[in-house]
Image (cartoon, rainbow, N blue to C red; front, side, top):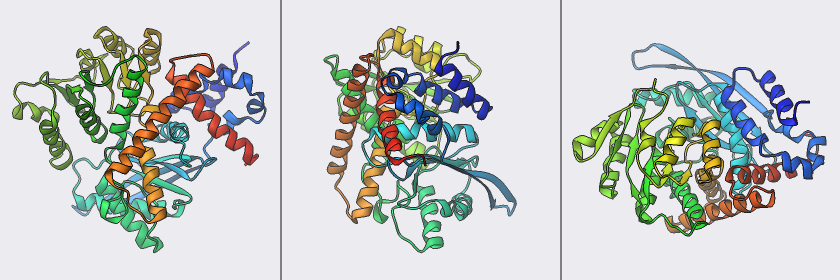
Length: 453
């Protein structure tokens, strides 16, 4: 007789064909829940899981815009409002050619549990478009963002749905989106997070995901009597999350060794210091250049191009103590995970969303290394978005130190919640189970309280 998990996943797959990332995200959560459903049969009876995997609302729309040559371009926009049991929908917008409904649903589903872990009153949602901002002029990006908001504004609001940035959506895009929202609604409200500091943004927001990822790693290390001081750290990616994970590693006395982009990666055995990091931030955020340019400036470092057809990424063969995957989903497969463990890595803290494949996760769990899954370890970004919402609602601006202190406290609480929940449900040290169960319980109990809606 098939198990509950098998039957449930067959139903999810049949209802959502070709959405493999969504299937993966659902499977990862549901596979942790058996002990919960045994203790709480009322959740099964009320079909809480069946309701959780079905978004409350899915919005798909056309985004027409004109490029600088005067040619009309058409993209697809979407917003998946997944669950509002504990607060307004909250989650980023992603502008990237790979965006499709399955990816947005996986991200929105993850966001439900991640937001629950922050203890802040935020539901889960996600959105975006297959538009590629790379190589586009500021004018083209502005025209696209304005057209995108011409439809999205109908579905969002500070008490309804509060989008933020994600891959391809930074401060520039948030500014254009907010400007159009304000024009259409005549409201200046905290409807988007990641805003500019001089018009409602929060200090520490750009740094928050990377900082939180490293704070979570440090909390895991403390359970083994260690700190970040002296740790060799491999960082993937070179965007916002990677940059500030590197900065926090430096501040805590660790040694960051790598950055990567879609072409390859650099290894700097001397360690990336604040001066080198400033060069990377300028290179990626202002010049929008490639990581191979790092070795022209710092020739003692090495650059390795990566063939995407390879069955593994040589980045994860660099000898390290701590791995901080901060690029994109499924960047660490089973071979990569084995390579990390062989290279001496004993702590992985995920800054990206679901950067490790299920087979890779299995390797980490079986090897008993410290493994912080994305929904817990990278929750600092959305937590600080929540703090931005609070500041907007109160018409206040907290200092950098206040926001960082609150972020640090939230990450300590998330770690303790995951650790203690894993122990309570019979899998001590398993942060995957701890995060999934803790997030699920908060949302499930709220759904039970609110009835069949």
